Structure formats: structure tokens, C-alpha cells
Image (cartoon, rainbow, N blue to C red; front, side, top):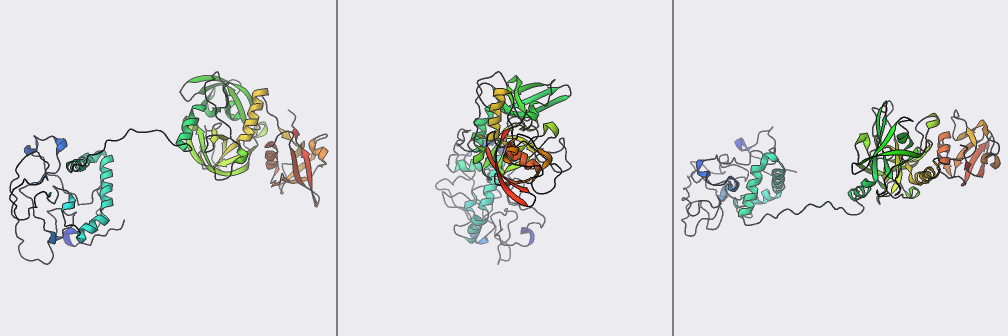
Length: 498
């Protein structure tokens, strides 16, 4: 805020290095110190003390002095254009009436008025009374003060109310307000209700269905996340969470209410990185799946889980990208995900937790995060690039795992050349399997697949991810390059052999 006060000279100007504000919001050098505590004040309760007038040292305030309102009486500048000794103000008569009345109460009716005294019924100016009586209404100083310092005064009030070291200042303000007859309203009861569609409301509804999965092995412990998907006690999570303990590990599930129950694996699939656990609980409300095919970039999302073992953690962000080929793992444990990318904070331990849309429906299962090159699983964390398995794939695979313990994988019936560095995915020298869907469609060894369902194929992994996002029995179209010619090929996906 621009300071609109005129520059002062001499002792009235603040030191160049002096901060413009006191630590709790009072203008630097502008608030007079309260009078020392004396035995005369001892009979009054301290809670009622404001800043009493010292009648032995009260000075006259003349409007023509135009003294800045933040100046203290002892440092006020002499009025410009005067010379010689300043006339000493006549002392105010001793106050009469109730000695316990507020320090700036009006003079009793009929009390004599001395020089510099205020008319009956008007509180005196200065530190003992409200600042609004310090200058005549409409004067330039009053206008400047209201324009420049009222916001600062409001800041001082807020600071006084929230700062433990400024209780005295806050008490003075409250007492003065009470003396004016304006009752301070009692604070209303707090409310935790939030409107539908808010992050807080969605989180409150989802958290009872989200669980923390704890894995114990002889080599150590680990944690992951999951969520209830039906009323039979089935929990969906990642394969790399459920199988982290191997054949000798034990799995326990910690519910949102703190209860811990044992769990068993109903089915798992490394290729989709999904697993279903079974617990003996039927009273947990399941989360509902949304349609990931309807998600668009920019949609708001909420990630729920137990990052670093911190259960019931909620973060939010947006959908950053769609159909992102992600292939974590290697060998038989390699995963192929046509992922939803999000900037919602996802960290180790979030794996298996739900990614929710702004209606509280599951649109993804948090599975992987990107890491800065050179970081490791122990040192890497969220950098705003997380990946989730789309809900359309997750719900379909979960049903298969519950029914049979395994998942179906759609396939072309070909092998690809992993060493090919050109555009597209090249079929290996002996890639086309006899009797496969590819063989029936006329594909040949060495063909290069350039497009799959109208989308560019960049490499072998992106082709596999695109195929795995479909279902067995789907009819797909591909653009294929053979020698110098391109052709369109249509085929029906078959189930990959177990």
C-alpha cells in the first residue's frame, strides 16, 4: 500500500531503517505506551482497564496544530508558523462522579469547562479516547487518515485477536467497543458441513471406503492403499502392493475407523497391475466407478490413500493427460497401462488408492509416479506427474479377478522387435503366430504398425498398451507399412494364451 502521509522532518521522521510496522500490527512509533500500573488502579479489575486519562499531564489538542494522529503527545511537532513560547494549557478540573466509569466518559452535566476542554457529552481526544475525536471532521488530516490507515488499523485488530503476545491490545479494543454500547456478537457454532461437489464433501464421503494395506515379511514391512468395491468385502488395489510380501508375507487391512482385519488375495494380474483382496467385512460402503472414457484433460480429480504410511490423506489436482503409455516393472512383472496422468500429489504408499472425479466416483487407480532421472525408489517422490489405471480397465479386470482369479488379455498374436528404433512397432522376424488374429488378417513378419484405432504408434510398448486397453472380441483397425506401401487392416482381438 502506498503511504500517503506527508514527509516529516527532524525528530518526527522515522529512522530510515525503522520498520513501518510493529510485530503485531501497530504503526511503528505510533502507539503510546499505556500508563504504568499504580496502586490507584489496584481496586479495579484488570479486565476492565482501558487506557485511563492522566489528568496531571493531559495536554490540550488544538485543531490548528494539525498534529499527525499517530504522533504521541510527547513527540508531536510544533505547529508551523509559530514562534516564542507556547502557551501552557490550563489543567482540566478533577473528574467527578463514578471513579470506576470508563476513562473517557463525558463530563458530568454542569461541570466547568476549562481551556482545551471538550463540550459536554464529547469524549476527549488523545490516547485516552477514541481516535475519531482527535481532529475535526472533514479536515485534510482526517481524510488522509481514513484513506491510508484504516486498512492498517484493521490489520492491527486482526493481529491482536490472533496473536497470543498482544492480548492487552486486543482487550483494549474490545473494551472500547463495549464502552460505546455496541455489543460484541457471540461467536456462532462451528459447522463442518460442506456443499456437494466440494473437495471436503467428496473426501468425507469417500474416506470410510478407503483402506490402508500393511504388508509384513521377514525382510521388513510396507504399506499401500486400496478401496472397497462391493458389499462382500472385496478391496481393489495394485498387484505390486498385494504381492509385495511374496508367499511368506501377511496382509492386514486397516479400516478408516482404525480397526485392523486380516486379508487374503482373491486374484491378481501383473500385466494390469491390479489385485483384489478379500476381508471379512460387509458393512463398509463401496465406492462407485465412473466412466474413464468420459474424462477430459483439465477435469478436477482427488487422490486418496496412505502416502508414506500416512492413512486417510487427500490431495487434489487435475487430469494432465490421457492415454499415456506407462510400462513400469520389467520381465514378467512389467505392467502396461494406458494411464491417466495427474498432477495430484501421489507418493509411495498411494499405490492402489482411488483417483476420484468431482462427483466422488472412481475414474482411476493410482499406480505409478514419474521420477527425476537419477532418483531412486527411496529418494524419489511426487513431482506432479502421477499415473492412474483408467477405471474402465480397472472395473473390468476386478470383475474377472473376483470371478476366476485371473484376467483376460486381448492380443494380436504377434511378437514385436524391441530393437527397432524407427516410427511405429515392427513385427519380429518370426512375429506372426500361426492361427492368430494377425495371421487371419494377413499381417506378415517385418510389417510396421503405424497407427492403431486412428492413433499414432510410437514404439512397441505403446502398441501393447493400446491393445491391452481394449477387450477380447473387440474389432480394431490398424494402418500398416510393408516395404514402401501402407495399408489398412481390420481384425478381431483374441485372448492371449495363459
